[in-house]
Amino acid sequence: SQQGEEDPQALSIQEGENATMNCSYKTSINNLQWYRQNSGRGLVHLILIRSNEREKHSGRLRVTLDTSKKSSSLLITASRAADTASYFCATDRMDSSYKLIFGSGTRLLVRP
Amino acid sequence: DADVTQTPRNRITKTGKRIMLECSQTKGHDRMYWYRQDPGLGLRLIYYSFDVKDINKGEISDGYSVSRQAQAKFSLSLESAIPNQTALYFCATSDFRGQGYTFGSGTRLTVV
Image (cartoon, each protein chain N blue to C red):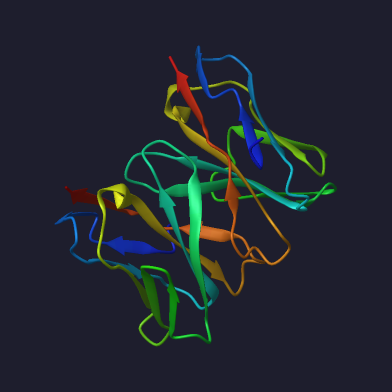
């Protein structure tokens, strides 16, 4: 069963706009990670946020984590056409010995 | 060379055939994983290995087997392929904390 569920499933925005993707999960976690996948390619690790952190930044990426609501969000600011990809959250559950469970992803389209 | 190399990149095979997908990594990590990706379902864990002598089943191990030949090599076998095993297969590796997986480029498998 999927641990993380992303919302929305698909998102289309204009270049320059911000993109926000949300992830909800079910059980307590050690950390939550976000990955990016260009069409049909391997996933690339973007950012990790630990369960005791609330916000983290990396370049144009901002991730928040609310453990009380079991949810996370990924914000991409000033989006570019090259940001077009699928984005996945993955959770490292406390009972899972550091193996990741992935959500179903958000497909982001950034229109030039 | 890529950190994680999967072979073959694409494969078409017939129902009932045995097929092996191979993965090698140059990260020097102990942990390796096999995931399957189907459209709209994200990635699901098939098998994982935390070191050469350790093999564990994931969510969807039925119909699959694995072999960890060395720290750097982890292969996935379909003993008797069936059409619903048509999918994109990914190998990944991580350090012992699982903080940031490195993925291969994937093997697109079609069972006809």
